[in-house]
Length: 281
Image (tube, rainbow, N blue to C red; front, top):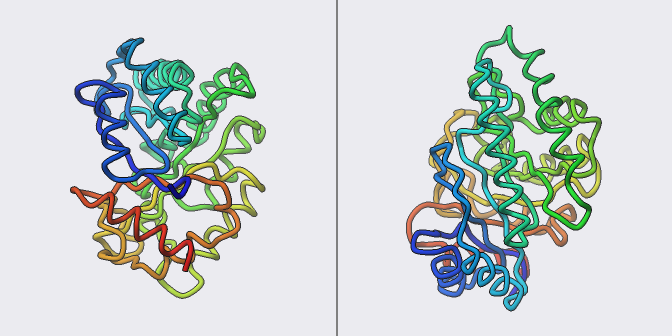
């Protein structure tokens, strides 16, 4: 199995039972899961037997696993209750990630919601993330910030926005980046033009440093560049197009970096196969 190109897997019916069956069905070389309701604040404890089976199953298949935190997480929010829930949810996700041997926890960069709150939002990034990052062991999961599709006073949408985000936590070694192609396109990076994907990834390395790119979400888009809309499409069937993904797969920054497909519907196996082909062509 070609290592590293995988998919977001369902977990309904049991983490190991559902996710590992899906991994096998789509020939995934990596896997991403939710450990709670993606659109809620619930923080379930998990099932120790399923956790153990999932960890063992990933080890047997030699695939890395990632946890995606709740989509509600917003550590830049002007609402104190939201920040507190976000902190607790990230803490829970990191504990769950460690218990299933996951390599990282993906969370959205967040939004200040209104421009006047922006300076305070970056102070909140520091206050929330630094204690979490300092507590992470070197052999445990990393925190992976995922820039958003933009809009709504986003704290990090474009690649250059990651500079202030990392500065807020003193470029902590346990913080890394999850790069989502659909988000970058929505935020205005023209990945479809020849050299566009390469330039964007070059810029990401320049802003964040070598080795900060830890995971990629490979998603085509249903919308135009700069639309600020996050609507995923099957790879090669959207407005970004297959040529950009060929650039992505061959970029030196992706060496050893897993790629997760979050495209809609039942075509993950097709997307994974296509990306593998683009890597080896």
